[in-house]
Length: 163
Image 1 (cartoon, rainbow, N blue to C red):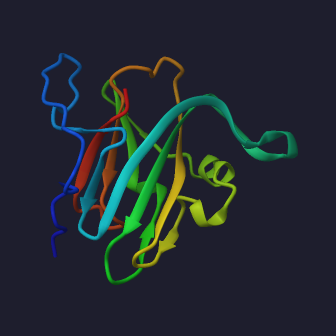
Image 2 (tube, rainbow, N blue to C red):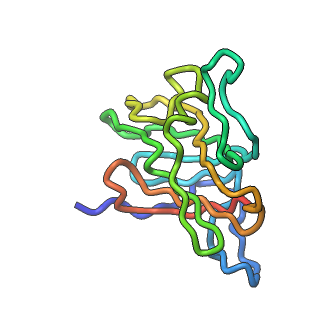
């Protein structure tokens, strides 16, 4: 069974239609836009770079090998059955490289277990916000995209321009 294609919600922000030489998908979503993948409604809210996440002083945090790219995401289940949200749904792409989420950093940064992006069950009608954390090189500041695979099966995907 194929997943429904990603589609904007009824009142999305305008898509980026300008051409650029960055190599990024000109139809990618932007930070703040909401899109849907079947029963999931997903919004990338914000992006920041930091050296540490969580409570490092108390041993409940992580320090990046280089720098953490922290992406705050809200996911809502508009379906009729529970679905599992996981950080493996999210990757970063930049300069021809792909970066996976750092699950340990995700868990340490999302101190409320209900907002953890690691194997969290999301019931119908419920939304959650949490951070997806990537350990990346410090020079990763331009032309960075987040690719989101819809649901645990990853049958549909969308690209969000982060920089």
